[in-house]
Length: 469
Image 1 (cartoon, rainbow, N blue to C red):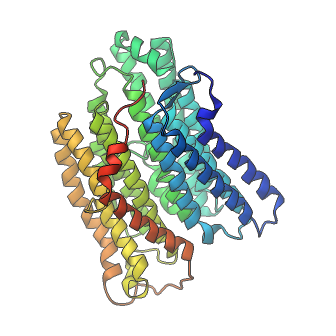
Image 2 (image 1 turned 90 degrees about the vertical axis):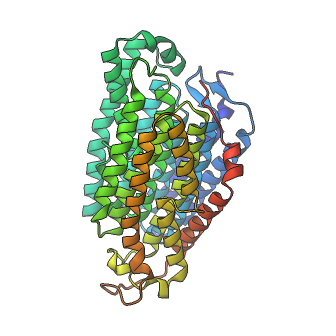
């Protein structure tokens, strides 16, 4: 069925939630806007429930083949609301009582909507609109605190996003001109006869915009600045939700381009190598835990791009989706620890944390070792699946590079974890206030990443093995 509004129920609930949250926040006293946050949370829960219900139905294209309601879209519909709910939870203490509290929730909902639309877009025009919808809330979230660091983060994110957004539109224009169509089915049928040079320029331009959304090299420069300049809850959202939509969109659109005409697989493999290597090298010398996490997300995008490089294989898609789920849980958990301890702004300030905050320290250990890929965490299974798919896809050299980078990344994660487990006072004794919402989110995310790793077999079995084309 071409026109089916109910097929977009999860997306419509996010949009409706954003409108109701905005209206509710507009009529509430500035110091008592918690009902707006509650409405936002209910909208996310409703969207998640609708996604689970629809996932039991048949895959189909809606609105004249411009939007795919298939397994990857269902996965994004589940992961994005879950990650956004966790962000809302860890943001309670930071946003409560702020006069822009409702705005934060609205931006989270709109950013979530953009991320889901990116994952399901099956038309270049829908992809361009989804990119813009996923971008503008990020700029506002980066500068939500309206302080000097937030303004700098927002400006850098906006300038790079605008530049690469224009580049993406250039790619859309070129591909439309070459194929005479914007829907992915039309692109697949027509691009095989397109001039190689023009097609290569269009693919690279399109790729550049989506790599910005995924926080991957070379569109990664905004990530560490946003991680340190934005509020911690906003940073958790910025480094998690856009990756989900951006990487699924990459896999979906690149499969429309014949790799016999343009070897985009080698290009993605090179970008993945640069991302995981540069992200790790830049993280080695960081003393700010948030900036360290920023560069960590760049390297994690490199690992995920390995699955995109061999897209089209059943195990590659499963590996990508599982990796995104594992990364979302683990990354939000690490940022939740930082949100629970905002006064500890250096790695040395975490010294002695294990004695005073054992549960938070345990969550930090699980999340940091999880980002490395230590069993039994979910990232371990995600990396194993992605590495296996990449090896079977003929890119054994990329697996070797990724394995070396994984071992190297252990160094900077341990630079954060070692002081937390060591006895003694921190470098500067911080004055800490209780942040139970952030602490509970950290512990919950850590427990979830272990549970997902243990239950990886059944989860992988239900994940989709192909994209609807």
